Image: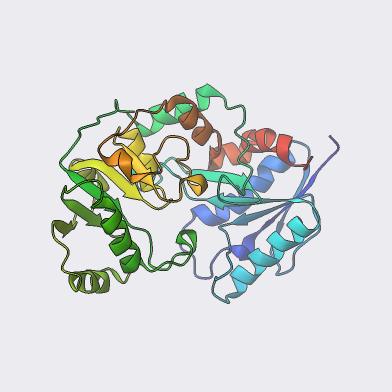
Length: 313
């Protein structure tokens, strides 16, 4: 493969950002590209460049705010895709429950999308050593499946109207989900709202109007406290399912195909009382393969791996 051109976009970072991790992503990625003999540049302007690969921190979706940094991300992404080129998207570490401050600086990298159904995660042939290394660094203990872990059904909500949840409002989704659960079990239901959902108090008041029996709202800050009571976990398609699966708790996702836990979670409510045990080894190796530290970006280790997928077939 001949020399590739790569541009990363500094102005795609939100204005007023105070997280030093974000500019490091932009600069370190290009350091790694150049260390591998390719031609990388950090773009500090507001226009998309015609390169083989573009790099943006974070994603942009159809209902994003009309902010300048988001318009730049969209411009870069559209320009790459429309020309048949690649766009690297940098997303959150899926293992943050085991390293809440992200002290080891792992982040997730993919081409062209952020769901397994839309993105290329470069993990078709993962190196098992990456998972072992990451597991040791983050002190992750993969627990045996516990099919009778606790007495309750735990629902882990996503942001109200969030784009990954197809803009669904949380309370109507909850009511519908609870009604489905009641066809299969009369266990107590614990509801955990997304910690970043600013409407949580409104959700509690609105949900109370339905007078649903045997539910309670979690006030625990640490999700592990809720997991301790969970017979199973129910979620739409987000990262709590990663953690619950590692913790050995049977998990049901209602949009499993777009989840990073696809293949190790159930898709039907019948699994509440009749779960099966999935082999999590290959799945964990794949997830580890798409996570890289900022140091691994700078040395070129991440780019040497991702470069194999840099040109579309």
